[in-house]
Amino acid sequence: MFIHPANAYRLEYPADWEHLEKDEGRSCGFGPRERDDVGLWITILPLSINTERIERDLPGIFASAIGEGEAANVRRDRSLRHLGFKADGTSEETANFWIITGGDLVLFASSQAPENEREIWNPQFERLMSSLEIMRERELLLRKTDDDLLQRLRRLHPEQDYHFDDARIRGRDHTISPANLYKEVAAAPERREAIVANFVEGLASLAHQPPGRESLEDVRDNILPLLRPVSYVEAGMGTEHLVRTEWLANLFICYAIRTHRVSRLLTTWDRERWRMGQEELHDLAIGNLTQLPWPERLEGARESGGRLIMLATNDGLDASRLLHPDLHRIFSGPLGSPFYAGIPNDDTLVAFSGGNSSLFEHVLQQIQRDYETSSRPITPNPFLVTAGGIASGKM
Image (cartoon, rainbow, N blue to C red):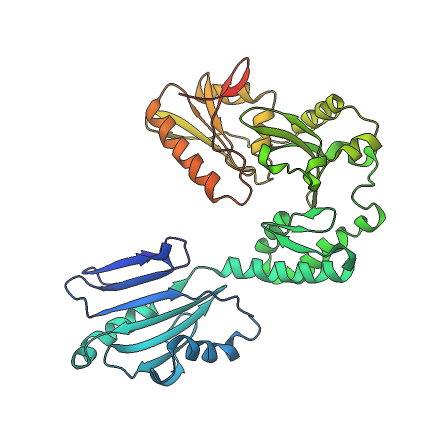
């Protein structure tokens, strides 16, 4: 069984065959080990597909991918698990072509075998293609959700110029997180349109209390701390006006109004409008942080002679919990004291035992990878958590 490195698709190929990955899995080849003139390549096409028209448009996409005069006898291939077409190659090198779509992907495949051996190899290629399963149905569902949400928001508030910015929808003066919307839709995909409509209806309060005009009493319980790298604040940009407190490892503590639908970082104008000192705002945010729930059990894994716990609350505030006043008390039981912690992005807090250099290096490498691949990175640096507080961590 071959599983694509990015979980795009999977398929079965003979035990005496080998596979080759190119361009981080964008193209993958399969064929017998002893032959370099027999094989099949599958490539992920760089397309953004319109799911409503895909069946009509797929033959045209297929023709463009093959090239003029390279194939004949294009037909629907109903042996495939997904919508797809097959064509016969007209050159000596290529036996067949396929195009197949599922979820949010379009795959293009071509098989190669000497003409006098195709009766032997073609059935094997066909079995391989019929086993291919695209694993992107959830991504397609979320893409449809995104499209529907954005269209409804633009109709409701055209003045906001809504657009996607990484994992959030950004308006002129606020951002909207669809994370909880995704959870609702994934749990009941048949109700997607109604769920999106209810979500947007719930945002109608923005018209009555626009971002930047909230009263302190209305949002007091929703103000929370967020950690941001120093580079997040740029001179001459809107981030220059964020309320922020210098912290460790070139990080700022910023403050945000966070609800399950909307997130907005607070500015000095908010603080002045509320006539609130910075220390008072910080204490309020940390107090609200202590009210956030923890998992009922902090279960971890034993690795390299130590123990590791990966927090997964799915509320986008895992990294903020590094600031929790009871962090050491909560984690020192299973991990010992002192222990280390890492926050490569908003959604990750990893804590691990101290005193083991092998474990330290192993986890630090993973934190670095998560930091480099995240759309909202915070820091690749570890922290040492002791009963007396937190410090930048080095082994």
